[in-house]
Every structure is written in structure tokens, then in C-alpha cells.
Length: 155
Image 1: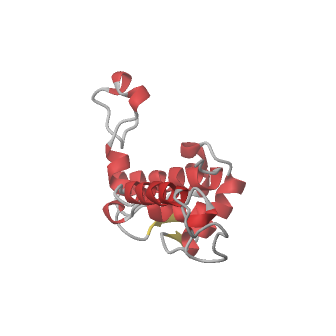
Image 2 (image 1 turned 45 degrees about the vertical axis):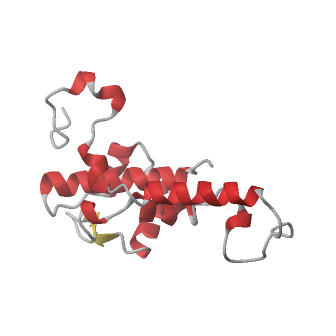
């Protein structure tokens, strides 16, 4: 299963907002700052942030010093929630989806067991990781070069 850019970039944006909350308290991040931190264009972020807002994961503050912030604490937001906003259900094949038309081969299909186990594993994994965990870990490639540098100063 391959995640689309919607899922990947939504998660990047949420991590940026979680870092902002951890480092600055209740501060907001402008779309320009989110774009700078994530490497995602403002135009694309507008669409993603609108979806995250509709899912009640973030809220927008208007005005000159406005921007976006998390609705809940990073410890309370699961990666699975974020990915489902961008991706929908996290399933590798349609035959394990509970809604819609059942697979014509469903009866007696032993392969479906594999897809169900993969789906369960994926959902269990992403639902066990919070944004707080992500912002507290160091990226593997940068661990050696960023000793002693916190997530808030980024230097």
C-alpha cells in the first residue's frame, strides 16, 4: 500500500503544528510557515488544511497574526486520524472494505485473510502512534549531526 501525497503532506502539516504547540504553547502557524517547514506549496496546503479543519483536527484563526493550530493536544491525536483524512480508509484492496459491493469471490476466498490481516496491522500501527511521539523523536538521518539540539530551536 502506498500513501498518496495527500496523506503524507497532511501528516507533515500536523507535525509542524504539533511542534509549534509544544514549543510556543498556544501559538498559531501561518500557512506560509507551514509551507516553509514542510516543503509543501501553500496552494496545496490550503486544500489539505481545509480537510483537516473539516475533520476537526485543526482550527483557523483569522487576522494579521492568524494561522492554524491543533484542536487537541499532540498526545491525543493519532497518526491514523490524520492519514484517514487524506487517504480515506487505509485498506490495501477493496475486498476487505465493509461497505459497498462485496467481492464476487468472497465466499471461499482464503487470500482475503491476508488482506484483512494487513489492514488490521496497518490500522493498529497508525492508531498507536501520536503526534507527540513524532515530534519527540529525532529523524534517523539527522541524529548524529543534531546532538544536543531540541525540536524547538531546530538548530
